[in-house]
Length: 124
Image (cartoon, rainbow, N blue to C red; front, side, top):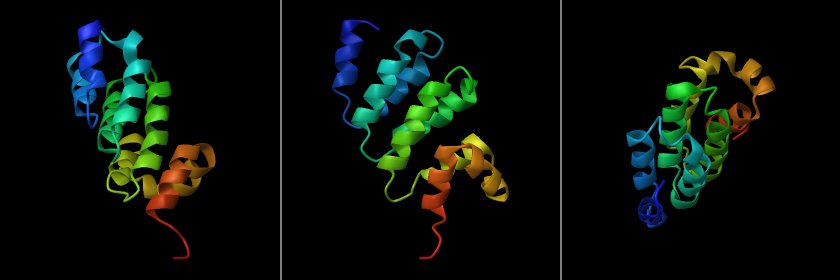
């Protein structure tokens, strides 16, 4: 990533520019992915583009981008306080039938457990 692009992405106000850069340059930015994910987490205050990026990377190559997806999911849990985007994230990462497998997924995936707990709180 050249210095001009870095400056543009530093000026990103909500994560959209970073998301678009990732989507438009996939395949040539793997070395820059950690910095791009950090920038996305820093700039996106609501979790909208953090979730979109996690979903996108998961669709492209879940294993290759596992570390980035993990960071993005953790950020989404913290940022999406109104739970607007978490259900979309859950169905993208764990399938549309994730509710049917909630106990199993919760036991083996802390991110899933945290998302599910926010989407379906018990005792309220």
